Image 1 (tube, chains in turn purple, cyan):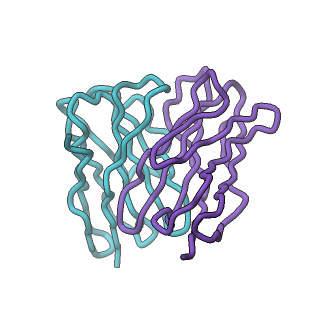
Image 2: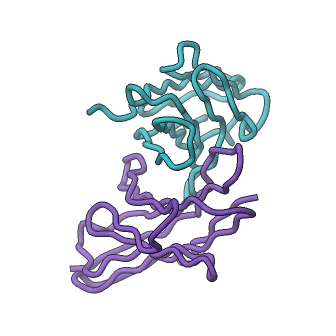
Length: 115
Length: 115
């Protein structure tokens, strides 16, 4: 079975400071990992994904994430946070090889960036 | 280009009534997914279509829930004899194909309230 844990319900940072949103996963094979962001009353927007290759992946809006197989983690990072980054962030995983194409999501982390 | 669209955006119904929720995927996307998001939680998988057929319906909570995609494009999620516990945001997503490397693109969701 595949699962994701986001250990922090909330993350608060000052604008201009680094932002990290934590994610750990559990799979039986190799993971495909995704980050999504959700703004109020909006659908989930895709940020980035890790499939294979370089452990550091870069995505939209200056976000990046680092895949760490030994720690089964895929933390989302941004070097300098903006007030507009305030939103709900979800990590998701899909196990491979598998015929299941569904994503399993974490419970989400609310990010608040203060001016 | 146009993203995933869902109608209605909001639906209020009485307990015991029947509802239909519609999803229009991104043009050319062969894979379509339905998820349900309850307050304070991440999306939970309901059903997945590859083309016209339901490839995985393991997430449907019971036989009151049913979904169709008759022409391989638009999908309808149908809920019979609605219960208050069905209240949630129902999200639809599509991807280019069912290969796990492709990210899923989400619609804005339908907020269902059962009174």
